[in-house]
Amino acid sequence: MGDEGQQKPTGPDPKRDHAFKIELVALIPHLRAFARTLTGDPTAADDLAQDAMMKAWDARNSFQMGTNMKAWTFMILRNQFYSEKRRSWRQSQLDQEAAERTLVAVDDPEAPVALDELRMGLAMLPAEQREALILVGAGGFAYEEAAAICNCAVGTVKSRVSRARRALQGILQRGDYERDGAAAGEAMGTILADAERLSTVR
Amino acid sequence: MIEQKAMKQPPKRPAALDEARLRQQAIGVKLRQMFDDVVNEPVPDEFLDILRRADERPPEGD
Image (cartoon, rainbow over all chains, first blue to last red; front, side):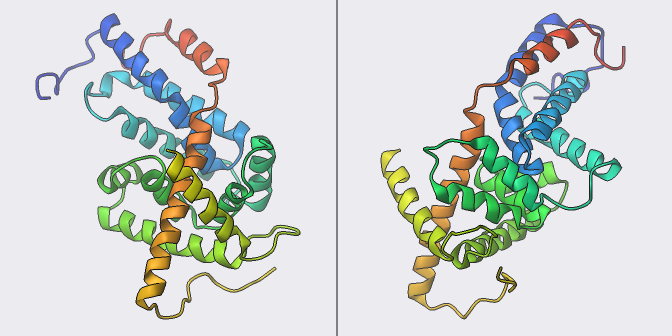
């Protein structure tokens, strides 16, 4: 901390670039995962993740080594997503069609059905609730970090996460998501059984 | 096609609270699994190719 805080862009620094790049490459899988939850579409997600990766690379001199690069890159990715969306993407949040494509793209015969239903449920949440829940509940970010990424107050993130959790639970219990042939209300039971199994395995 | 809103819930009793907590934990586990499934996918070569090409370009502000 401190020492390099005010550094100016003083020409190429191969050693620093190299260290930056190693860290950035390690974050690519996480950027892809976050992008997938934002777009709901694997192809669009990878485009978004690549754009964010390049923006991060181009802005590397403004990043302070030693600080949280994951949060920094997630913020870049999120900004990229919303600015593109404002510009050209359709206004609807992750729609049912995109959710279906995600399901098809995952295409893992072993994947438990409940995971599909969770994706469907997530797709029904308002975008800001979904991203807050993903960042905190899956991305491993503290509320403070999620707030920085979403450019909002910590309290806002907390309330979005808790509303998202409640809503998601309600959706899964009632089987509100549109899905042919699935018995309503069964999703939660499957999730519970599955989660129990998973948590004992880990 | 059920059209009701997700927000209205009956008042909770302690037993229901316990169950709610359990359900939340379960959702949390699945949520992480869903995210980690993508994290654990192999990264398409394209990503590293793009980065490699970018390496030859100077950073912004030069």
